[in-house]
Image 1 (tube, rainbow, N blue to C red):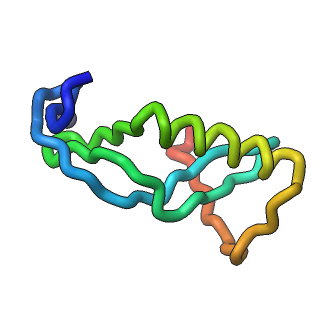
Image 2 (cartoon, protein in one colour):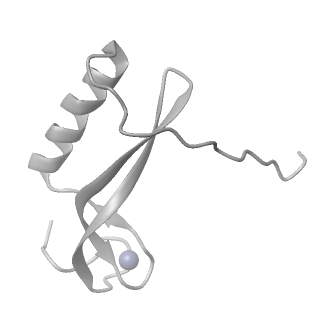
Length: 82
Ligand SMILES: [Zn+2]
């Protein structure tokens, strides 16, 4: 992966901190301030291998309940009606 270039649209990417939303056992969880390269054109997020491993390891902890959430928020769920 070429750094600074989006593999999808070839737009420029910039280092940012993003909130990652994942589904864990049917619950939505958010991990804040994950390091990512974000495409300025299409919004694609790219994570370094190092960061992906950290995220995976952390999500395992979330699954086993060995970490406690910092806060809880209500999530609004909608559907397009299909
Ligand atoms: Zn892009």
